[in-house]
Length: 167
Image 1 (spheres, rainbow, N blue to C red):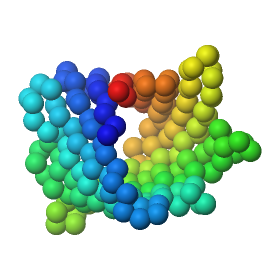
Image 2: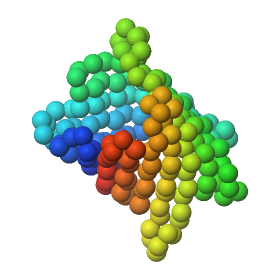
Image 3: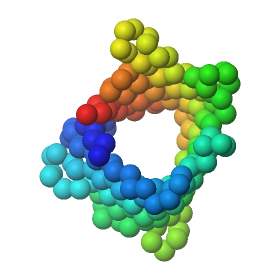
Image 4: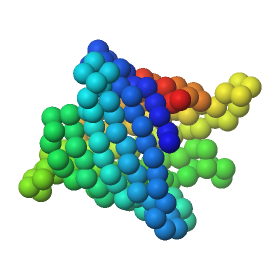
């Protein structure tokens, strides 16, 4: 099970996030993940998503159901496609999108982004770094991500940020 501690600039509460992948078939798995808000002790997010990977295409697609902190049930579909630029695959362009609907299949939220991703192995001894510069298409918002081994910092140009520690 993958667990992480998460904190966002728009919240004073630390969240504990857990994710588990259960294999179904070759390239297909059920992904269950949830989050507990430490200020209330209650779940703030629960989701079950069937994800299908296409390694030969550097792509994945997922469909699932989710429950958010306002106890709203919804459905999600998401996809991601990577376009390697360098021969070793450490530099590339990612295109990803997500579309959420409520239980009545009415639009709730859509996101789409294009990212430039650069992975640097052994930046320093035993330290790997990944840098992403992206543009969220629907919000028209540039953002960046810096990941160092277990730490991840995300921020956008409006000042929103969050940090994650993978345990």
